[in-house]
Image (tube, rainbow, N blue to C red; front, side, top):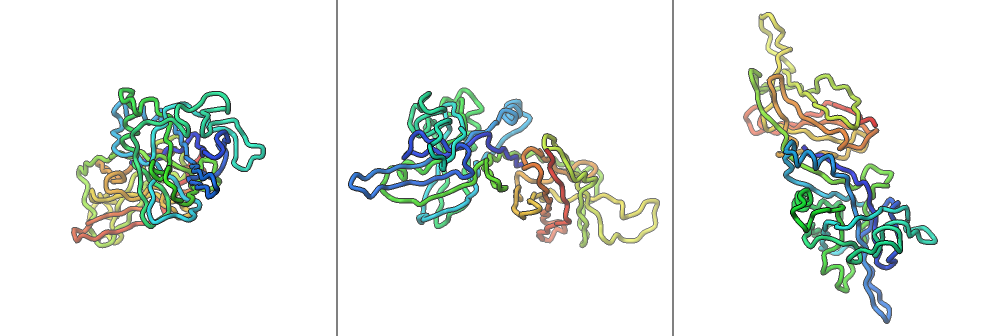
Length: 351
C-alpha cells in the first residue's frame, strides 16, 4: 500500500527577514539571494513541514503495518533560473514550532509564528540553531538537468523517529527542506523553486507517502484468467466512501465471450483470478493526475478464495474528489504481454 499523509502545518523561513512568518502562504519557496553590493552577503530560504503521524506510528509500532519506505513529496508551482545540477536535502526538526498566520505579502510583516530565528511568536523562543534546529543526519535528492517535483526518500529518518532510542530523530517535529550545505554557503546562484503548500487551492499539497506490502495470496479453487478477452471490474462499488474508512475493493475477472456448454450453472458466472503480477493505480478523474502509481511491490493485488482485491485507506486521498481505478496485468496468457484495464471504475471520497 502507498498511504499518503498531508501536512498539519508548513511554512517558509526567510533568512533575509529573520522574524517574518509566512505560514498561511499558498507557496513554499527554496531560493538563495547573493548580494552584488559592496558588502556582499548570502541569504537562503528553507521549508518546514509537519505531519500528524500518531495514527500510522501506532500501527507501525504495534506490528500491524510493516513500513518499508517513506517519501516526502513537494509539487512544483514555478521554477526560475535553475542550474544544470542542484540538490535538496531533508533533515528532521528537533524543536516544537508553530505554523503561524503570516504571509510574505503582509505589510507590516506578521510576526506570529515560527521564522528563521524564532520557533513561535517573534520574541519568545529561539531556535537553538538559526534557520531551524535539526538532527545531523539527512536524506537528499539531486536534480540533473531538470526542475520538477521533489520526492525525497525519508525512510531512514521516518523509521528512526518512531523510536525514542535514536537521539538524532527522537521527538522529530517534521522535516526541514533546504539546499545542500555547500550550496547554501557558496557564492553561486541556484535559482528559485516554488512549491505548493498545504494552503494551496490546487490538488497538489505536499504529502508524506508511507509504503508497505500488504498483499496476500490464496487462489483456492479459482480458475486462472488466461482467455484472450477478459472483463475486469469492481464488485459492488458503492461509488462514495467516507474519508475515515478503510475500504476493500473486490475485483472480478470474467470471460467476455465464454464458451457455450451444457451445465447447471452459467459459464458467464464463473469467477477467475488474475496473476500475482497484477497491480492497481489511482488517478484523479478530473485532472488525470496519477495519485497512486503502479508499483511492483506496493500496489500488488491480493487474492482470496473469492477473487482478487486490494485495500485502501480513504484518508490518504483528498476528500470531495472523484478517482478512477486502473489495473495493470502482466503475463496473463503466459506470453509476457502487459495489459491495462481502464473500465471507468470511479469512486468519490466524502468528508
